[in-house]
Length: 156
Image (cartoon, rainbow, N blue to C red; front, side):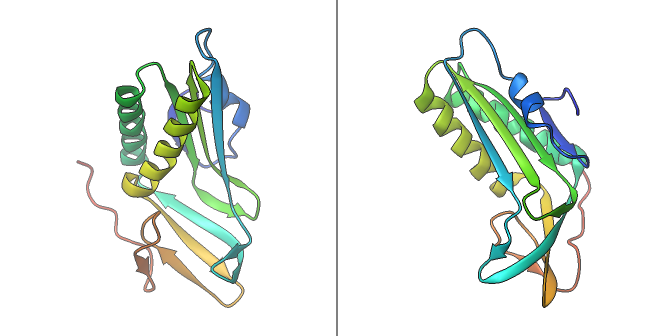
């Protein structure tokens, strides 16, 4: 496991290690979001997912989300780890840990983080079903790539 607060990794995520990065004496709440691979998506049985990312850019975008949270909830501490590679049903794909002095802020900041990940982080997934497969071009699932993986752009 990495000690980076914002990480993309191929090995399984150790949830407690992500949480440990946000523990501190002023935190009265730690909210942990754990995103897993589900079996059914839009009525199709998923066999497994293949995540790919532009790791250096993805980590920069995760850190950007952390900064945005810090600006909105100044007392928050955030750690986000997203896994790439082949993930089986029930595998952990993403862990977001947010600590704040009070629970409402930790819930709100955690929700903000997962929605922003889906909006701005360059991570793609290939869904493998019983009857086929398809690259999903963004985490909001608004763009697909039936002809293959999306092209990775040069780093900004």
